[in-house]
Amino acid sequence: MGARAGSVSDTGLAAAEAARRILADVRRQPALRVPLDDALGSVLAEDVVSPLDIPAWTNSAMDGYAARGADVRGASQAAPVRLRVVEELPAGRFPSRSIGAGECARIFTGAPLPDGTDSVIRQEDTDQGRDLVAIFKDRDIGVNIRKVGEDIRKGEIVLEAGAALGPAQLGVLASLAVAHPLVYRRPRVAILGSGDEIVDVDQPDAILSGRKIASSNTHTLVALVRQTGGEPVNLGIARDTPESLREHLRRALDCDLLVTTAGISVGEHDFVRTVLDELGAEQRFWKLRMRPGAPVGFGLLREIPWIGLPGNPVSTMVTFELFVRPAIRVMCGHRLPFRRSRTVRAAEPITLKPKLQHFLRAVATETPTGIEARLTGPQGSGILTSMVRANALLVIPEGQFETPAGAEVTAILLDDPVHQTEPGF
Image (cartoon, rainbow, N blue to C red; front, top):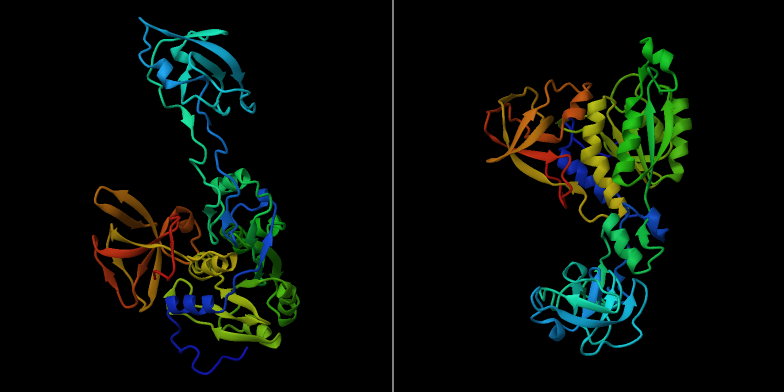
């Protein structure tokens, strides 16, 4: 894969600039209609306008008696008000008549309120008579009713295009009889691992004997892609030969995004870039000024975006968070691709050596004076358990070798649901 002149310096590209370049070449997926129960996590591709009022009619908010407030006023234990019960209205049954003076209707939660009534007297304040009911309190005058359209008005935009569909949004769509919402198609994300030393978990003997290494990256990436909203396509594990890589990479040509791990550095067995070049790919960059994760590549394979991640497990996860996750979110139709950055306080001094931008695994904790963050421990790129403990990445600027305890530090909180338009690193 030939590099464009001046596309990246020998020292590499800054992480934020790399993220921007990737998103510049990523496109939102086309829209399609899907069954409502399959739309969880998808993004709406059109405004949803309500065709009706919700509630469609004024109804009871509890079990009791629909009555006229004027008839009930002044009711007490000492001087109960007695009303004639002229109708019983379970949920789903509409009233057959209006309620006049001295009358009421036995009513249940959700049933339409009869004309002439403006109150639902809770059954606890009555003697629950069948034909004649005694009311002992007047506290429910004008209450315990759900008015027509108090939740949604007909013609109102209920959900805007770009809204992510969670359980509550699906419930709203169901209430509007939207059986097949128009959403952006989930991108098919091809995942390819490579290396003669790794095998999948279907070879436990080789892994447990120490002869081979389990391909944890494959399963981590499958989970991360699915969690982000994409559809993972596992291409398997390619050997460290051009022939094997070529065979596996061809399977990615019907996908929307290609993610590879390992094989893009400068080692004698790193053939990914060479094979991509043979397949007609155009390279944008292949090296970043960051740790972990300096060997990150990006290009287009026949218009399919390719993101090459490092092979070390922590590097894979960190670079996925910074580059792949935002790309998938854009492809899914989200308007805010990046996790929000926050200012936190370092709970301990941090000393670093290389003049690179560092992304350190940390545990961020809310305190009365703000968010405090402490490193998970050793920061080696092979210590995958550090990602198990981490809920944040501390962003240490390039050239900042010493960070004292108590200093303010930028952090990306990995469990923060809020997102932003620009990279916060």
